[in-house]
Image (cartoon, rainbow, N blue to C red; front, side, top):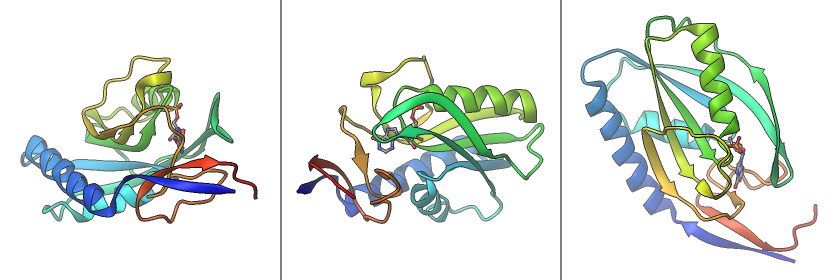
Length: 177
Ligand code: IMP
């Protein structure tokens, strides 16, 4: 049997997402920028974030990475989708669901800088889970900081399930498929 304990409600998330969107727009001033989501975990956060923005001229794109096996990072980052837009000399904001060890984000930063040469890159993450950090990654926008829970919902999964929960929580007890 398992239970889901709620960490952040829909209302708390919506308020924080709006604040992040406002802050990003303020910092970007009138400059053009491209928002890039790292799938799959960021898909709900990303769609709420972009719809919370006032500007209508932002461009969006997607990359996709995989590193997790169950509840732990395999440490090997597999890129399963690359950008389709040309972001050379553009300002880019990379949007991630959660930064745990930091390996995915640092791998992505390195890859995108080398392969696509943007003018500038910033990083926006919904959840920062610093307890198992293995690399020093700088995040410009952070939604919430979380303890060492394996969190689910609002896009985040456990074994590909629970992404559709409208809130963020964590599993207790034993979950069996
Ligand atoms: P990192 O490379 O260890 O920083 O892990 C980053 C990726 O692992 C994220 O993009 C998530 O997809 C996944 N991940 C890390 N922690 C969690 C969690 O608590 N719940 C769900 N996915 C997680």
